[in-house]
Length: 522
Image (tube, rainbow, N blue to C red; front, side):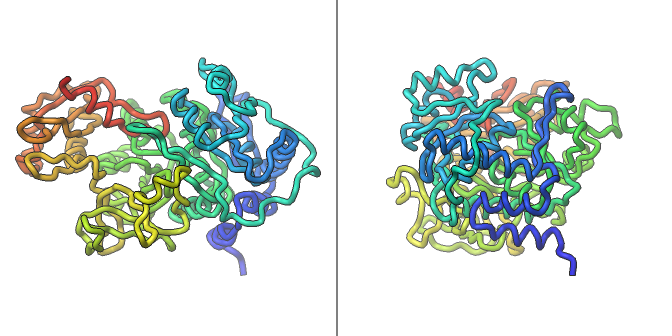
C-alpha cells in the first residue's frame, strides 16, 4: 500500500529531535531542494537540497565543536534570513548546544539583555549588515566568543563529533519576546515543543511536494524553526528573502513560482496594496495559491479583499513566542470561519477560556485564553516570571481575550491590555479596528485608549489614509461607525491620521505603546 505524504509527514513528526528530523528527511529525498536564496541578480540565487543541508550542517557542527561548542553550550546568533543561518542553526542542533536567536534589527539594549540573561558563551554576527556594524556592537557589549557567520561558516571533519542528542525534551532554544514595553522575556523551548508547533502549521496547511513556500520574515523569529520543520515534514522548498521589501521582492516570488506566501497580517496588506496597482485581471504572483500567517489580528474585510482581489486562499493562525502555533485556519474551512476566526487547535493543544476568577467559560463567552500542550514553552529564563505566567494546572495565561465557537474555532477579541475602559465600560479596540478597515478611505487602523480626567480613558483611532482617498475627518469616521451599528459609547473621540503606523521589524506588528506615547498630552 502506497504511503501518502500526510502519513509520511506524521511519521517524521515523531522524530525525537530536530536533527533526527533533518536526517530522516535527507534519507528520503536527498536531492530535492529545501532552501532557495533569492538574490537581486537571478544569477546569484543559491539552492540547498535536503541532502546538502544534512551534510553541510554536520561539517559546520564539527567546526563549532573545534571552537569549543559542546552539548549545552549557549550560543547566541543575530543573523539575517540566509542559507548560512539555517545551516548554523541546524549545526547547533546537531551538537546539542543551546541556541539563542536574536532578531537582526535589535540593537544594544535588546542584544545586551539577551547576551547577559542567556549567559551566552559564543555570539555569531553578520559583521557589517545593512550599514550597521554588529562586530562593533558586540565589542561594546563585551560579548564572548564572537565570530562572523554571514557568508562563511566554521568547517571541519564530522568524525570529531560525539553522537547527536538522543532526546528532545531538554531546553535547547531561548527565544526573546519583543520587549516593546519592558525588558524582553527569554522563552525556553525544547526540540519537541518546536516540532509540535511546526507540525501544527504543516498539518493545517497540507502542502504538497510541488509547493514552493517563502520566508520573508527574520529566520531568528520563532516562525523560523516553525516553517523549517514544515519543509522537512512535507519535503518541499521555500524561497528566502534576506531583506523583504515590495515591490523589490516580487521578482523572486515570480522567478521561483512561489505558491505559498505570507508571514503576518501586515504582509497580506502589503501584497494587496501591490495587487491594486496592477490592471484588472493581472495577478501579482501568478503561481500563488495561498497566503498564510499569524502573529497579529486579521480584520475580516482584509480576508475578503485578499481572496477577491488576489485570487488566492488565505488562512490565518494564532501563535506567540511562548507557543509557536496554537490554532490555524484550514484551507477547506468556510469563508465565514476563515474571515472571522483563527482556526482550530491541533490534537494535543488544550484551550481554556476563563473568567476573572479562573472559572471555565462556555463556548461563545469571551474570557482569557489559557493553553496547555507539547508546543507550549518550558517557562522563562527568569524563573520568577513563571509563577505569573502559568496557573496551577499548568496552563499558560496568554493575556489574550476571545472565545471558542460551538465548532471549536477560536475567535480573538483583543488583548487584556487593549481593552479601553471608558466611564467604567469595557471597549474592545479590535471591534472598532475591524470596522475601520472597511472604511473606503482607510488603509490601516489602530485604536488605543488615552488617559482622560473625566472618562478614565478616551477612544483614539489612528489611521493610515488609503492612497488616492481624501483624508477622513473625525465626524465622517464616527458617522460611518454609527452606520455600521457601533454603540455610541464606543465611538472614537479623537482621530489621528498618520503617514505610517509604527511597527516592529519582525512580523510588522503595530506598536501601540508608541501611539499612546505620541498622542497622550504631556
